[in-house]
Amino acid sequence: MEGFDTVISGADVVDGTGAPRRRADIGIRDDRIAALGDLSTARAGARIDATGRCVAPGFIDAHTHDDNIVFATPDMAMKVSQGVTTVVAGNCGVSLAPLRLDGPPPPPLDLIGDRADYRFARFADYMSALDAAPPATNVVAMVGHSTLRAGEMDRFDRAATPAEVEGMKRRLDEGLAAGAIGLSTGLFYPPARHAPTEEVIELARVAARHGTLYATHMRDEGERVVEAIRESMRIGREAGLPVILSHHKVAGIANHGRTVETLALIDEARRSQPLGFDVYPYVAASTVLSAERVRVSSKTLVTWSRSVDGVSGRDLAEIAREWGVSPEEAVGRLLPAGAVYFLMDEADVQRILRHPEAMIGSDGLPHDAHPHPRLWGSFPRVLGHYSRELALFPLEEAVRRMTGLTAARFGLRDRGEVRPGAFADLVVIDPSSIVDRASFEAPKKPAAGVETVVVNGRVVWRDGAPTGARPGRALRRGQLDAPMRDWRAAA
Ligand code: ZN
Ligand code: CU
Image 1 (tube, rainbow, N blue to C red):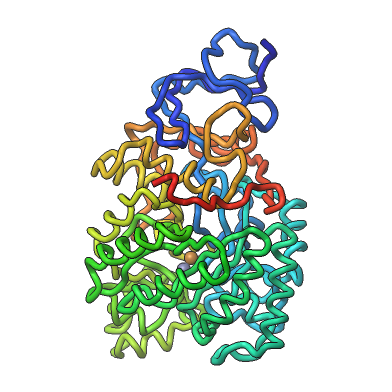
Image 2 (spheres, helix red, strand yellow):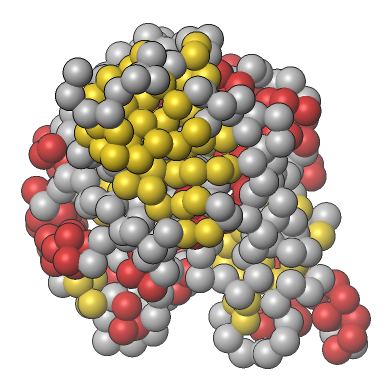
């Protein structure tokens, strides 16, 4: 037998398909898994002893806002510390490219960068910049509808004109040709709120022509969540492409329990069209600060403010009391700002996580001064808290929801599974101790139990720290499979 660059030995392999774990050594040659089995006598450039541990495919973060942090913090510690090896960027209608700005980015575009960061007139330039300065993780990205609008429109409180729609279609077409894997919208947010469904359908048809998909932060995740799911279904049907409902949730105290309704509707829809969703494992949401969201939340924490110093991590109600003003007035003084909102029900979160279609996505906001803990904790929290401690599903099933399922949905060829021929994106975990340690009070704490993380055959995380290696790749649509069309298969 030829030798290997690296052999991971002694572990139970959890292969990403949901199959029961089995003992096998993993032989890595260059960037791929070359062999699986008893490799105890094989020649190896390096050996990683993983006795008593599990090895899984590197986790795929189905929902991120990592478009810009991959340049700013290329070691991607907040992700690789969780075992994440690929991130899906460009979510919620917000992508860093294609857009150059003359002024400050309109919220929520300011969540991922300042004016100077929006420097890529073409999506191809963004992909080239990733090639030139790769991060530790692989990156796939979508083109955001709000980013397209910001590039074509002088104001957002109206539908785009036919000429503006044409301009957006051209930009989108360029992005998809350069390797973007889909179109995302954030119809909830002001830059896109006044876009009629027909505008989105026209753009989604361009995405469909390129064989890509549509992901959406829906118009409403509260009282009108069912109408919003129906709108998303219609866009998928009329444009003819798969739909991903982003960070599925039911928000607002008055709507607690309604995931019974939304998941039934999703199941019904999936009988006739490809429709999936991602979810993060917390009862609190996070985005830009707005009085509207504060009103439906039981508690709000400020994550950053560009107008007032020293408020990151503090309770909004407390700040308002201190200033002797209403929470609404306090919001006005803090803007532009971000917040964590406690507005979900634990039973809803668990019901969504338990659904066999649930992909895990962090929705982490990596530029926030005091981020939601989902940025550093989502994947170990699903594995440690929801799988091991609460027994929502076995470890194998938890891993499938963050690897094999996600790779199939996005068409990430040869990723998300441990098998010979697949890329060597791997994570060694201690199944008995893995758990999130990031909290709302201390949100930047690396998880416990993630021991070694390998991306394209190279170790990026070991002994609780990044190695400094940056073997990640910008994965382009043209090198990937089409997103899976028959989504019933995995259910
Ligand atoms: Zn969103
Ligand atoms: Cu998001």
